[in-house]
Image 1 (cartoon, rainbow, N blue to C red):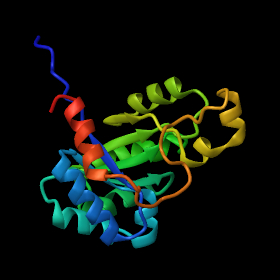
Image 2 (cartoon, one colour):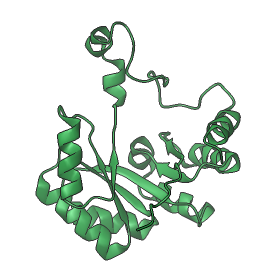
Image 3 (cartoon, helix red, strand yellow):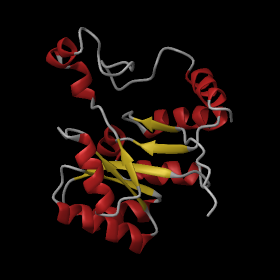
Length: 190
């Protein structure tokens, strides 16, 4: 049996609150070589599934992740996200196993890949095994926005936040986004 080569996938989370700003970031990301575009939770909350539709319309060949963080009503949510143009959806490991199974079934029925997110799980390896056993396509190891800002978490890590990202806002970075993304893509040898 031949070993399958795994190329790294670069995904940008469009965790913004307007479609126009998200599309601007997505254009920069695509020019820089980013593979997947994520309609982040803040974007979907602010703009609804219209945000997924807008990203799909402008980038018809790119995978689009709808990060709705499904916790219940899994089948219906996946159907809605798929109809809006999502190619990938996110279900939370902390959801009931019945929800994870419903999301996986809806993903199969609608041609959408399922990402299982371990945000908030105490035992992340156990959560990953459970998600894999329930049939998700990808496991997302996720350190949340609030967790990155929590003084107790930072103190437990000897003064270091769990992520190098700007933990204070969901807004455009002051730096050259396209240049930074191009550097990341280049470092991956693509």
